[in-house]
Amino acid sequence: MIILNTGGTFNKRYDPIQGELIVPKDNRAIEEYLKKSCQNIEVRGLIYKDSLEFTDTDRQELLEAVRNEDSPVVIVHGTDTMDVSAQFLAKHLDDKLVVLTGAMMPFSIDPVEASANLTLAIAAARLLGGRSVYIAMHGLVAPYHQIYKNRNKGIFCLK
Image 1 (tube, helix red, strand yellow):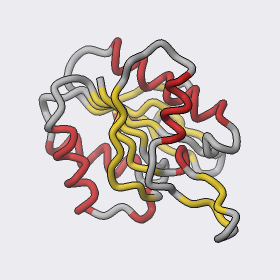
Image 2 (cartoon, rainbow, N blue to C red):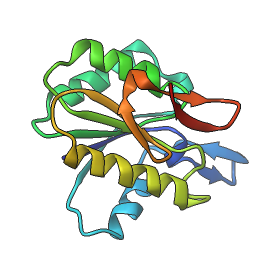
Image 3 (cartoon, rainbow, N blue to C red):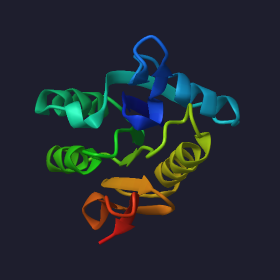
Image 4 (cartoon, helix red, strand yellow):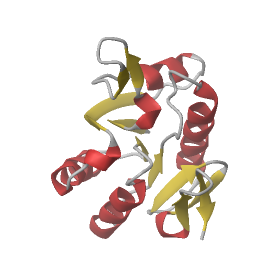
């Protein structure tokens, strides 16, 4: 298994110079999470953007990274366009198990939700069989087209 880190809120940190939350070009949040587990999982970073800034070129880069993996892939992704990237991947992949996850609150501010979501995604990638694209958020794991971000409640829900 590998974790592909694309940025998003999960990874955001406060930059005191800019006075705002930024998506750093590193994997520190995920690496901090993994320090507290006995799992030997490779983390590879790419794109490093808020998902609202994602383009089809970014999604193509993500697709190529997934295609190059032999094992299940967990993708840490921003929640705003996670569904768009999941649909893009599903359209172009039929031989991979992919689980996307993210966070509504940065790991650096409150690691609880981010850790729970990543734990869920890793477990799903280990236990789910087959070849499909899933989203794992807020205690739910479902095929990407059966789960959505409920913007009024600030959580993911089943359709």
